Length: 425
Image (tube, rainbow, N blue to C red; front, side, top):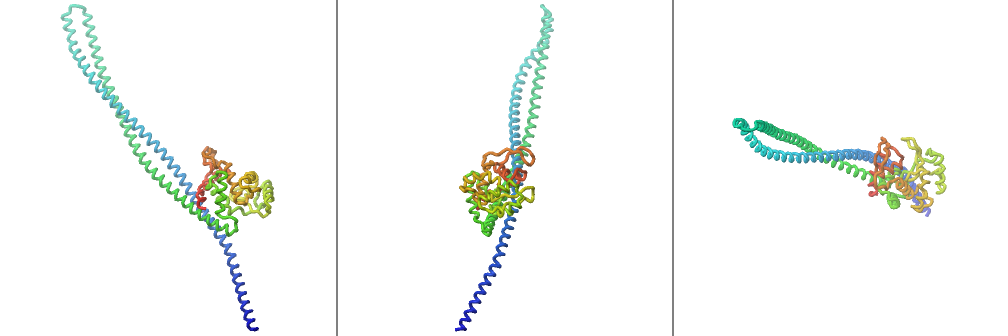
């Protein structure tokens, strides 16, 4: 009996020791693995973001190249149309001159008959004065006057013949010049048509390259969304990409801001809500005014403002941190939109760190800044001071980030390039 108890005791201790070893081993291996997984996913996300940015930069260059090609296509087409119009005009002028020459030929034939009659008359009339004088019985002055008239007729005949010759020669010269110009226009047309074919081929190739870039960006975006979803789960987030999609859809239905544009904005601003800040309010360098508003927001929501994370101050340019939640609103901006957000979501008070409230805040501001306008908006370019027209979404994104050349040439286009990612959520 004692031996059995002893064996049972040894067995129990052995099992307990094994269980403790397994738990310890699992805890030891699992905890670092989760941290390592987080770092690996974050590294992968950063790597994909860099690839997306690289592909987007290449896409922007291709789009600029496409715009230049399209401009050349329009210019070349205008030159082709002009050359064709000039050729048609030349053909019409040549045809008209051929008719003139034909009419001139008929006039020449008619004048030849008249001249022949005049010549005969002159020929016989030149002899008549002598005979008339020999047989003269009347006024000699009349005989001499008739002779003068005949000489005048002869001069007129010569003048008409010269005018006809000069007119015909002039028409033939003009025909030659027009024919030569027509040949030049035809040669130019031939060159421009060849150039147009080459431009259209370049345009088709560039459009194909752009579609390839868009496809690559879409694939990278989808992969990044999957990684962000995995990261959210590891971080214990209360939402995943499905929640993000629903929040975007809801905000779009209320404001009219496109779902793709909201997706792009949310991706750039906070990685779809996965990256909402790594600093506390003291580290943010917020102004005293914004700090007070930030405290008020936290107090109203029963948050400890000392422990609530906000964005850090930017390292690449002068500025402050303090942006909150998925929409990355500063406290004063959030306060300005607070009542509208509450009305739209039914959350009163609204919460900057709540996904639905944050996305709605973003959509409301973008709508207010013109993102839903139909026509392009005329602005003074912050890059060169020239007047240009920009897409309404680019305009709204510039106002969201801050008016700058970077916002115009990089931030806005990058956001629009990510629009297709919404459908892949």
